Image (cartoon, rainbow, N blue to C red):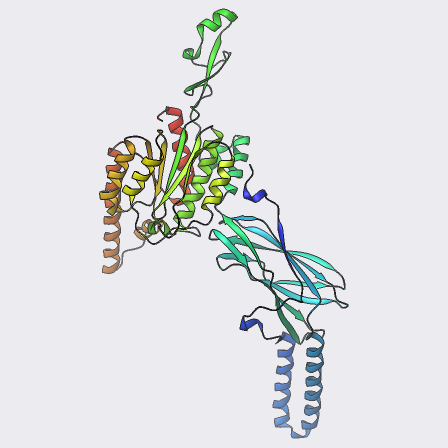
Length: 466
């Protein structure tokens, strides 16, 4: 599969001749090192001794003068810009929530050895470990060092610069500067789960993901081929005419129905901003939709998607397409999409989908159900259900269940507990009303959304419901 992860890499390269950045904190060229502080403490101790023994005053002045001279010489030695060349190779894309190693390549082009620290100014929405990087390079030596980053938001993210602190020869000063290694990288939904699924599918270990393959081989809906009868095959699979011609038992083998259409209807409203772990509910939704899209495309189905609930972003619509290139189109259409602060309009989303999609399809509505949705959501699902097979997938807010597990010691705790129970009860009642209309429902924690969607899809294919 040609995901953005497999595209060629580009490098951000810079040299010391570039102008330093404009941040005031980085304009201080010299910073005292640890050895300078130890020297200051030594002089303070000597000054205390001189206050008790005035005859030692001349010696203290002499030591102080020598120390000041060393400070000045060491500062002048390290003050020129270091002859250091840096490169930061960046992949074309990253996956949200996935820890990835990044490299910093250092090349000492000067005439003397350098001891220095590197701190890469990564985007604010990233987590990083392994910084700062401490290195010692001899003359004309190169080194490649690594640190780990984890993107927590999708979109086009920019690396601005790399900060360098070079230690002076006497280790009294740090020479502080930065190189503007400006580069951008696209952060996509987590497509690495697709590669994990493909590997487990190859090894027949899908149960590790919680995916249950219930159908026995040869028991799908569409005729696939004739083959020799095997022990364990149902008698209903035997093709008696073919068996008579071949003079041996011949069975029909079936496969799941193909050439069907799957459409994801993504809620981008304020409710998808809920967050129980490092990722928002909206990011969990995108990751699950991509993984199920990969599976549906492998099954020979066409996959499309539509969005609603955030007018700040242009609504995305991809009509159902077949083939693995469809997955790359989805990644590029969704990588910068964010949930907004507006309320969802389910009725408008249902009407627009009916206008765009005439052929019967499996429509998967991905949202975060609230108890106030009854008046708008149920009529919208009823409207869609007249033409399409519906699967309504909602994510539970784990913070509410965690609240119920808290001890009740005061009246405020009791009120919070009662309000949470009332809210969850009203939400469960809305789910029952949706199921009463014949709509398939999935109500799971965000971390189980991918597994729940895949199992529901495979169950629909097995039953031939679409």
